[in-house]
Image (tube, rainbow, N blue to C red):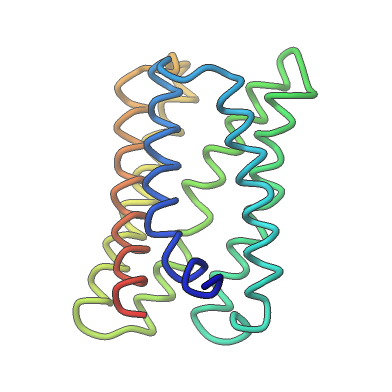
Length: 175
């Protein structure tokens, strides 16, 4: 049962995370629920990598294990920004968390595409491209001083969300 959950849950968790992130940017979700979400993600990432370590030791799965490992401190940055750190460093840590997750999966998506054939290759290349395009769009907004609900940030999040959701749903369906 736990194996099946580990294999399929990301197809729901990835779009949920990006939807939640977008809702937070729009002001529909406050800091407390976002902190709770970060704490849950911190635990899920650690549990997932520990429970899947042996299964993810080669090939494409090893690339994804690396993404998860790198994602733990990226997510913790957001957790710290919401709970411990105050002042000007707090928003920086939150930005590191969001931008980190826009970028981290992209190399693994491209690698998965390289190791795949036909439709899976196309889906993963497109997903990686959307992730990078979304990250660049989001960063342009951040460096341009955009407010959290600014369209440029929302477009960036949408590109990332669509791309990463397509990549993980394709992987779950094919696995």
